[in-house]
Length: 517
Image (cartoon, rainbow, N blue to C red):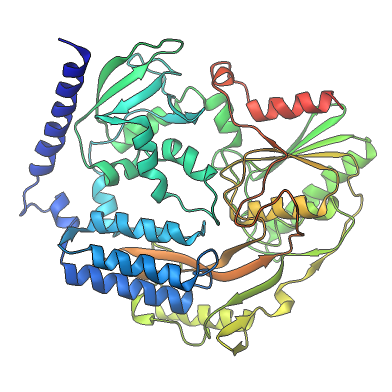
């Protein structure tokens, strides 16, 4: 039997497996996919889409950040006209993902009803092992006798690697026109719940792969596992000695060490270490930074590496604090921050859910939220509310300022307040060299600060977006195009060779760069 016929048989078996499992759910069962993934009529879908657009027009100040009103109207009208028959909630959800992604804001988030998500989490249908994006490929990152670590995955259940990655792009939003976050997330973050949403429930996974340093195609059938077993396997991933070092969930929010007598390393894993300047944890953080920069000055350390890779963000005034020790110029968080409605009257309040998709906001919290917004954005005039400037202070340089060679390590997962920090460093620190990958968060502007969540009436799908449009205090740079994240001076992605040797490609690059100076 030739390889083509064998592949066809494997593919047929996969589809039969999925179909059998999908059809095995009883309509009358108390816990079935059909119960949560209900069928929506054409009229219900059209109604939800029109409500979604109206909500965005009234509350989302970033809706026309990267596209004109004509373009936004066009994509919605085209989408509405294309829906001419009923479809399931999951099918409609995928359409909504495209719309949220098109807008161009990393803070856009779309999720089906939590009952559906929780049902999927209960299923024994998960891909068993971690995968990692390296060299534009899907690389096996498990430690298993099934498939060698470092193998290149060529297809899963009949879908080739390129198609797999492309199918997941819509799940990951970015500021502007950035693609780097989508590239790695299409592998690193896609084979849990998102795989089930995209490809359905299956009992097994038919894998085609190349073993390391081999061109021959091999095949393996892996049984699906529970979410708990998958998470156990992820903890045991081959790349853990490197990847865990920059995992903000596993590392402290900030730390410092001397790599040698001339080079210090400041890790800033998360800017959510304090909720504000009145949080006792904020003072501890400020004292930590002061001790770090005092020590660097006292010991005449000539090189400082600041590593913010995988930092998802946080809040101010946390991310501004290190910048004050790096620049000789005053700066602000933004040059303009605004919302497009009067916070006294929440747009489309009947569909408002809260500020988190996981918990509905009660009436008391809602009242407090409106009062807060009215304080920060007090005057609504000409369809815009500008930020009260007492919430946008000037940050002044602190002593001792670091005057040595600064190296900033970034990657495609740096977002929100972390990318804002990187923007300030690039804009205000003259002696900085930036290494890594373009951030998913924008350099010049983004929508952030205050999230709102709305639930659509028919599908119960929730849409989340941040309402504050921020023009960042980011000086114009020739090497910093509009609609992109912070661009590195040296683009460096992790390499497969270093993966096998448990080496940090990006850190190794900086250390070699320092030696040449």
